[in-house]
Image (cartoon, rainbow, N blue to C red):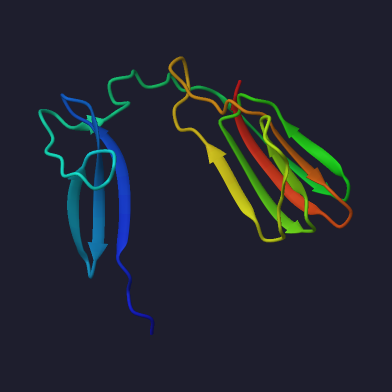
Length: 150
């Protein structure tokens, strides 16, 4: 049986002064909380009320989200315009390329799984700024799923 390894989770929180980093470390069933400046090393003591940094924004009024699922086998491309809430790619076979925004294409290997996403929608919402182009070559088989506010 493998030995349990520690688990660290991080969250950016805000207080009356600004934002800071909170680390939750769990080992052997015990959780410890450590607050630092955003550099992750300088100790920080929160001032006033601690909230999620986006907690002061009004929640989205139930935005409607449309989803797509596109499979590409062989040569061809799947293009996702800028403005999506999430994009996920899973490469089954072959070596397709991924292009994000104006960046150079990157070749991906079979077994690659990538996700880009934002978590707030509605009037104060977020969206992915870049367009995505996934281009298949002979022998490629990949799946692209997206969500977008409508």
